[in-house]
Length: 100
Image 1 (cartoon, one colour):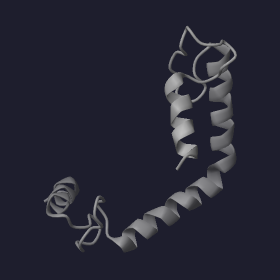
Image 2 (spheres, one colour):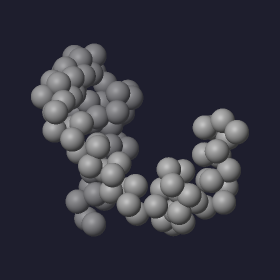
Image 3 (tube, one colour):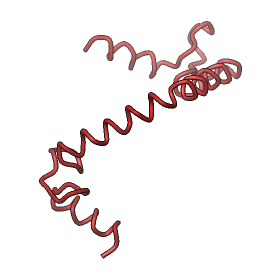
């Protein structure tokens, strides 16, 4: 059985794809491996933060230059003020995130 087949069967059975323990609800890994993955991602972000931030800044500048939403890259609404830099969907998403 290949690695992909192994992981598929474990997902179907609700087991961790790394160690065969019971997976946390809504995930494919057990709690221990969720913590391991989180630590790996935090370490990656810490080591590459400057590069990731620079790329994001360049993307936003390019999108603004072409008149696109700086957050998602979709076209902005034509009927709203041209001074806005984000589309209606992104503005609503930001509003609802702040209200949580």
